[in-house]
Image (tube, rainbow, N blue to C red; front, side, top):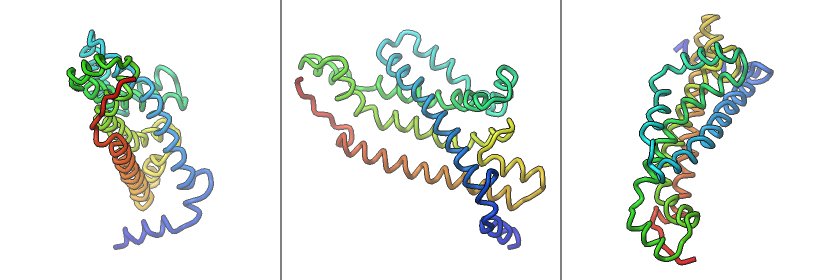
Length: 227
C-alpha cells in the first residue's frame, strides 16, 4: 500500500512534470526517438520490401541479413554503435532503426508477395499500368499485413527506446536508470507506467487507424477498373 501511495505521490508532484527533467520533457524526448526511428525505418523497409516482392532475386538473403538485428540484444546494438560513432543522438537512432526494419520489411515482402497472381493478370489485361496496379490492387490487399509490421515495430520501439538512457540521453528510460541509481522505487515504477501507457495508447491509435484504412478500402475488396 505504501508503494502505491509513493507512486501516486510521485505523479502528483508538479515538480516531477515540469522542467528539463520532468515527465513532459522526457515524454517528448521519447516520442522524438520513436517517431524519427520509425520514419527512417519505414523509408528503408517499405520500398525495399516492395522491390524484393516484385523481383524476388536475393529476397531471402536480404531479409535474412536484416533479421540478424533481431538476434542481437538492443543494448548490445547501442554499445556497438557507441564504439563506432561515439556518444551522439544518432547512435541511439541507428540502433532503434536497425531493430525496427525487420518486421516492416518482412511483412511488406510477404504482404505484396501474397497478392493473387490472377488478380494481377486481370489488372494487366485491363490496361492498368504498374503504378496503378500497385496503388489500386496490391497496396489495399497487402495493407493489413504491412501495417501490422509497422505496428509491431512501433510498440517494440516504445519499449526499447528506454535504452537511450543507457547511452546518457533522455527519454522515459531516464526515470528507470536514475531511479535505480537513487534506489527510488516510485520513480522506477512511475517510469515503467509511463512507457506502458504510451505503448497502450499507441496501440489504440494504430488500431483505430487500421480500421479506418481497411474500411476505406472495403476490407481489402478491390474493384478493378480500367484506366
